[in-house]
Amino acid sequence: MRALREAKRLAHEKDVAEAVGVFFDRIGRAEKVRGEARERAERIVSEAEVVAVAYAGEADASVSRLRALGEPVVEIAEMTGLPVSGVRAAMARAGAVPGG
Image 1 (cartoon, helix red, strand yellow):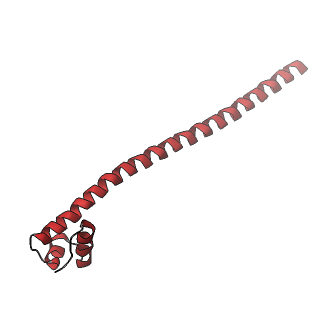
Image 2 (tube, rainbow, N blue to C red; image 1 turned 90 degrees about the vertical axis):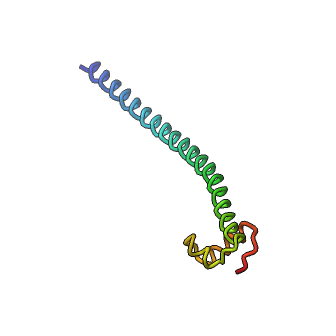
Image 3 (cartoon, helix red, strand yellow; image 1 turned 120 degrees about the horizontal axis):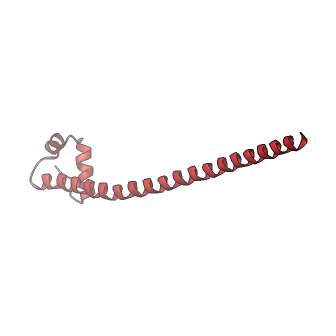
């Protein structure tokens, strides 16, 4: 009888130790997966920002092109939906003289 109780106790302790081991292993793996995902997401956002900045520069250049074509700032604002200050800011970013 005593040997049976001891065997059950040892089996129980083994099961508990195994469950705790699995717990810490899975917690570690979950954090690793999350960390890797964050790194990939940051890389994707960084790469997208480079492309977005280029597009924004092209948009600013197109505002300057409209001005170079003789369109008044107010008209450019109406055409693009930008406020007049936004048109002037776009032209400044593009290196154009914002007059008119």
